[in-house]
Image 1 (cartoon, rainbow, N blue to C red):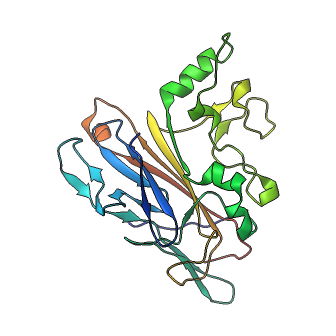
Image 2: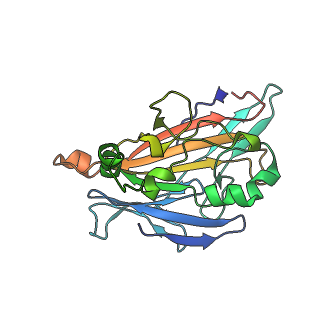
Image 3: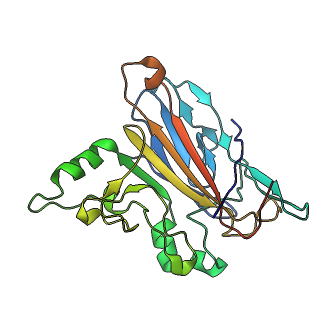
Length: 244
């Protein structure tokens, strides 16, 4: 696995159909900010109606950000440029992790696991799972059980995806045994994306990227923290080319 380091420009659910895909979004509003998160590499924008999607203070009607998007580009060993781009109406990014074959992205199994690719979770749910997983009649909540800890390697997906506490060290996510997601903040939304699932609407060559973007917030007495949405961004080169 190769890492690609890039610099980035800087539950309500809806959908928007673009030329590429149906775009799902969710909302992170645990503290004094309200942030719209899409599953196509664009954020802080209500993609369905092209309205600003980052409000602070929450419920004030004041929008601090209209739109944020992710773009990456690199030169291969032959000096050829490849890129993954996005804008207000289209994106080269698709939901879900990188898979080996293009047909795998269309399989019912892949679509059922990654068609939305927005996982919403609170730290209190994780703490409750840790405290009560041995209780009689305890049922692992969906936010815990659906966490994408592992990919399907038969599809060419990475075996390890989202971080989790691996209690027995076998590299398999097993929430029924007490294992749990590792996040930041009091509440978070994780999005996993790739630029390999479809031909780029921008016309650029594919890179083979896989993005793990964690948006998270703290509910804090400190105004600087309570009015902030944090982003942890990890970019992986899952393809066969090395880029600069």
